[in-house]
Length: 214
Figure 1 (cartoon, rainbow, N blue to C red):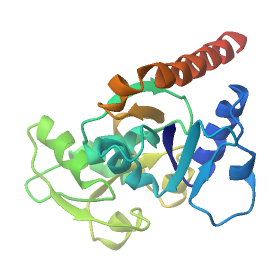
Figure 2: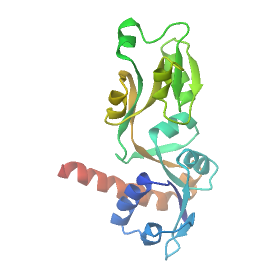
Figure 3: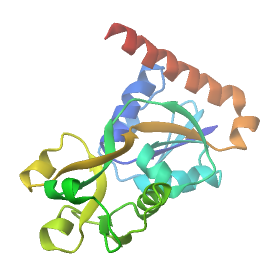
Figure 4: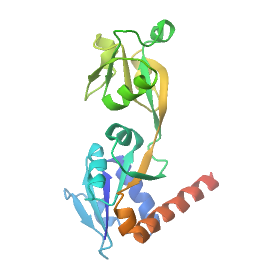
């Protein structure tokens, strides 16, 4: 049996769309159920529904053989996993954002405060530039940081940029692209190689076919 950890929400639905194209029966997961564990009728695949930020932990410790998580989550968690495939889902970008005048005067100085849901990514990004910042971890709308004076800038996920624009903010620096990635437990890749490879190869063919069609 292969166990797959899925993050609840839109990403799970999009992933199920792909898996169903491989002939995997995902009907039970589509229903209105509060169950957290589902098994296909043939018993070959088990799905566990978890919080997005928990996917890497379930895969690292072998509770799940495969996980689907955003690149932002993987970078923030920094766990020893094999990243096998970019599913091209949930595409967006990680960026530093703030008021436009910050770009002209310099994004950072000796007292720059950064509000973010991603303290590890933020610390590593600015450290890589040789800059030290004060990081303020927030769980809600980080855009409020600059608006209220809590922080000078933010580090967050940006899709269309509409939320930033409506709050008078803009992207100051891009950190990198983000999309859903398929990750695998290191031991599982050895002990269940054929089963895992079958799923990965099938998904890769699907994605390549869609890319060619477009």
